[in-house]
Length: 161
Image (cartoon, rainbow, N blue to C red):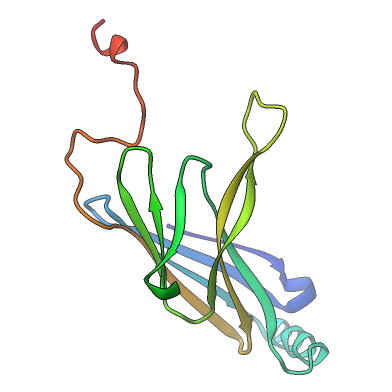
């Protein structure tokens, strides 16, 4: 899947493009986020934005908001984030070390609730220094899970009708 937007073009000359590939087994996801100056005018805007920050790079964050039922912990000396699901499955989020990875507070807005629920988000932070900056990341199962273990709760009474 490929998606993108040009929301940063007017201010920074950057287009955001995300590609996502799901493994055939369903046990892994590979993503690629790119911020790029596409046209000559975009490159000029980017150069002006870079000048405004004294050539220190344009800071950006890529955020992955988690469901409140996911227990997330920084793992492997900060190289990964382990995600434990209610089903017992463990998933691991990694990135290519282009930027910094952190686990930060977030909120979950849920239909039928008056107040948001506290949760966490994975944040990849970096600085765009060139006309194209790319960060790669993966989300994969840490181990095989028997096929009868599912992430979704289901009402067994519905299965008997």
